[in-house]
Amino acid sequence: MSATIPLIASLSLEFIAGYAALGALRVSMPRTATIPLALLAGFFLHTVSFFVCALCNVPLTLTTLMLSAAVTAAAPHVWWKNVQENYKRLVQTPRWTLSMYDVVVLGVVGYIAFIATWASWYWPVTPFDAMAGIDLVAKQTVEEGTIVNRVFTDPSLAGQLSNQPFYAPFAMLMQVMYRLLGFEYGQVWVSIVAFGFATFVWSTLRQHVHAFIANILFVLYLLTPEMLGYSYLLQTDFLNAAFVVTAGILVWQGAEKKQPSLLWASTLFLAGACWSRSESILLVAIAVAASLPFIARAFTWRTTMIYAGVAAGVCLLVFMAWHVVFFNLYLPVHPYSGEQLIGFDISRFFDVVTTTITKVVADTGLWAGTFLIFVTLFVVNAVSTRKLQPIIPLIWIVCIMVGLWIVGTIFSAAIVEQTLRRGLFKVVPFLFIYMAGTELAQRASNRLTQWELGR
Image (cartoon, rainbow, N blue to C red; front, side, top):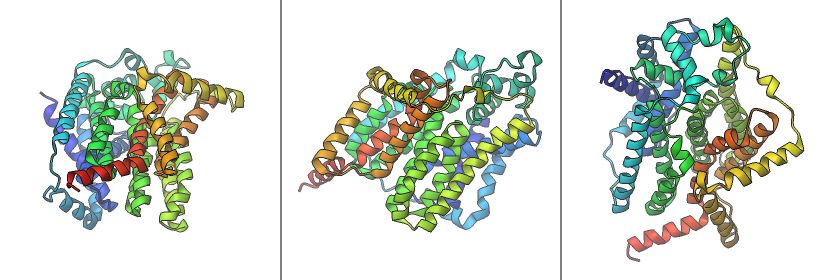
């Protein structure tokens, strides 16, 4: 119970930070989308400000956590005119009414959310994360008040560390903060991210297809075994997927609706992707670059290139803050990532592709029928309608897969059955988003609507 009040205060400030940031960017979306996005953005922004405190050699304590959260929440209000409009939308009377199938789905979602939250609170951190990487650095940071702690400074560990303690800092900093808040195992924040991201996926599905179809796709997404299993475990992959997929959806919706504010909002989550897992800078670079011609169709090439420049700038900024500034000016030891680079080999690339498809994608124990349903619908839709839309989600699926295969080819430590398997978390939500946007789903949606109206 001692953690309840600090938790509520922290979550409130993080939500305000994210919601105000979206308001400053003039984002206009349904509240079912902006509320979970605000929390996810707030988490990212708070970890950045908390990290700045570490760079300034401020001890990382509960007081530092709360003060940094307050500053983060206050900063976007400089653009008060835009933020004020977003607050007005927050308190408007809801226009959404529950249907019976909504009630059933919300019951399923509530049960899953309860299980995930309980598991992340009750179960200790897995032995893997307890011994290396995220939680190891976080525990020592809480004990010593600094990220530059014994994990990195103990002479007996010199040259003995794997690259895991050097992972992108989002998960580690969140783990530090929740241990400071009083949670024994810290990782309860993982289920909060998972639940918030799932809500955004559900809202996106509802915006693009009939509620009945959206709810079916959403339940299938939630019950994808491997995705569900990592919604309460302390790993970087699921959390990184939340940022990558959110960014991709915002790029798609920004181009589809011709709303530049959604493009600018996507840069916030692209930065979060690079802040939560290091190789994301390659994956999002490929996906954004491939999306530029379609963004240009909705806007102008000038706007498109400005967007590309801003996206590249914020991603490089957060990437360099950790991998260049912190590694070279603060840490006494450095990762040995360069030794794992083995160069690009075409035969190894095809081997990685083949292994991914035969041993990972085809494993129904990991994904149930997700990939089979997607391939079936994709082929039927393409043959019967001769349309591949929506194009941008399809581009992101392809680009992420290609990016993962490149990573699996050039890094010796990237194991297909482990690294690339979890990397597919960034693909699975896009599969359901794409299915909702296909011409077949749109036709079925229209027929359901007509049937409901008695036509």
